[in-house]
Image (cartoon, rainbow over all chains, first blue to last red; front, side, top):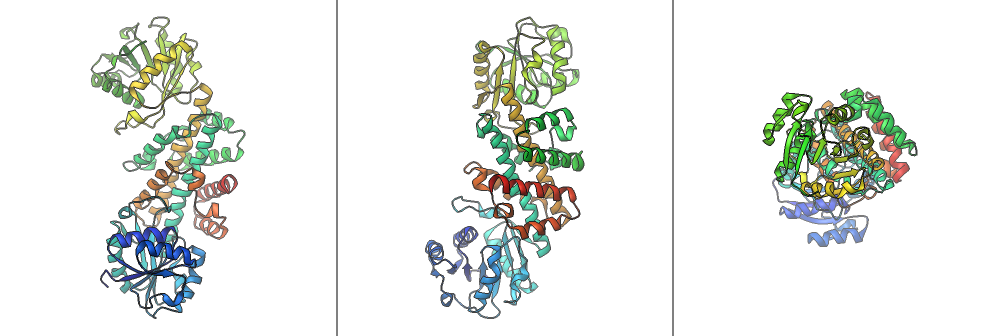
Length: 261
Length: 261
């Protein structure tokens, strides 16, 4: 399959918005936006200059590709709905990190995954070209066309199995969810002691930039790796009013000693 | 005190290197570099175009400022040594995050702290102008001169008490040490499943950039904040061979639910 051919977006949330805009930006044709919410479907469709709505009957039945970009727990129901209107043999991919491709197997013979590994917010521009696109197709013969499409959108295209994608999603939880939460703890400590929260922002940025040149093992510093027990105990005493953060401090300190010490 | 006047660097490690280079870059005069290691002192001194060594007698006794940039547990001993050669009434500041200024009080009447809040590596350039300089002087009258000097080096100058600095250093542990360790876990999971480690780098960068516009509370996503127990349990099962990482996953998930849920 060569591109451009038309693509139907099924979903109008953050992922669908960013993906849809990049498809349009790269000159690809989104022929319809469907969402359970007619309002959200229309908003994205208007943005992309195509029809959209929550009407099953208006979905083009012979599009080249259907991209299901809805919440993980809605994928199966949306797939069941979609299967009622599109041509048998159509290619259907979902965009989720944590859901196996096989959620689509009861409904389609040509299915797979088109997972952009990034955290999307509606109002934040991201450089889509740098976003890893993690691809899987149940039928090998479908892979080249999906990869061709992906390479139009991003410079980073990877073949990733269901099992690998589950692990990748777990790794992403550590990178995004947990890292973000550590910043919450840090900023809370600053606030409680009348220190400006932005004080640690340059440190955070350098911590991350370092990891472009060094492994985390090489970049690790601090009392845990130095086995500086006096500092560790002073810090735990300072966290006396936050037993949960003290537990987090203890377990991460033990982890650093165990893994990197 | 107006600058430039001469400054003696006591120490020749990563902090002394970066600080010394910025002093020179800003046209300030480093008149001597002392270190317990003559070799390291000479290397930095040569770089700065001044004398240096481990010889007490060569330290200028009437410099405008002595900056002690050595490991925390060496500060007291170095201060005791320094006190033998410099003029009474000299201004002496240490650069450490985790050590109270009062470690210097047995030796000097004019003392304080000049703490650059950043993680330094010898071979990595950092934009020193953006590094927060956290200042304290035991005698209020010394503060304006120290702040004037700091403002020549960086655009970010803060008055930070000993107690605040201890909390700031603790907050920095969460931002740097623990964040870095989470990346170790994440990359290890990728490696174990034959996925390229750089796959999550764009996600990490966007996670951090988001925090320039959003609070961590606003930026928090993932199964913990959604209370998606099925995903959490699947992830814990995937961490079966890494009980320590499973514990970390559990405690951070509980923390997100508790603090942000």
